[in-house]
Image (cartoon, rainbow, N blue to C red; front, side, top):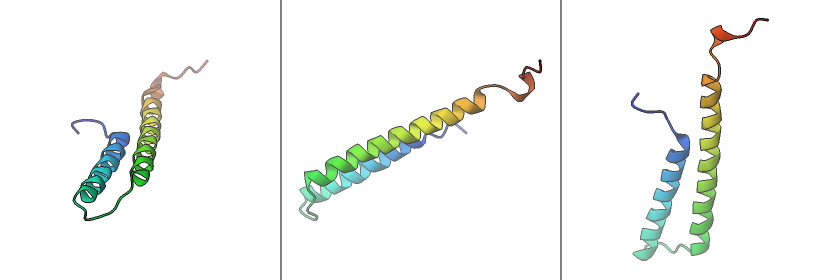
Length: 74
């Protein structure tokens, strides 16, 4: 692998892409989209991305916390 999988960035990118497409369709008068639809979409998507990123960070940190061979056996 070239880099770690980052689900938060994936979710944020997809949500922003969807919002951009909806905005472009609205600008071309092909679809009527209210600002009150786009704002919660973007805000909710960013919140979901933050949650996914935090969970992924916690999982990755837990995997690197302590190797199994170095436990204290006292």
